[in-house]
Image (cartoon, rainbow, N blue to C red; front, side):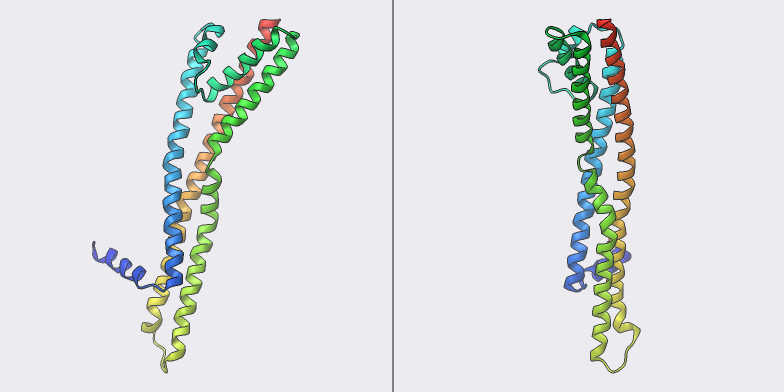
Length: 220
């Protein structure tokens, strides 16, 4: 450990108990947010790639009945799940109802499937938002506690010097820095992933509308 790292380590280890608790909370929040960041990044990238590959296969001219049979019974996600839900409902209702009602049922089924897929993609994003919005305040709380304890220690001395309050103020400011360290990545990746989810939603919704138009033509 270099001199700078040793300096910060000593300040953290010598911090008062309340400030240490704040630091531990912020460290756990930071670790949690990074776990979400890495896992969610992988999930969103996979969702985009799968949607692209499925739609390329869908628009290659494959027979819809064969495509449905190849997907039936599998754990499909994204565009494949929307197609499966819509075509299943279309096939079921065309046998007993008019074409228009079968299309309406298919649209509802695809809308439900789409919403469920987006809910899965949005999972844990609120946690990132919470960490990003609350960590600075938690760090500020530790800062306030540290400064209060530093000035309280001056009540027992006859002559106040900067050397007496410097350690307490240092640990207090580190609490603020740790709060920002936990918050900034969480806010950045929350905004980035929210934008990705919006783009994936638009992709799913466009596919749903195009597939619905195909079903309309089949009963026309």
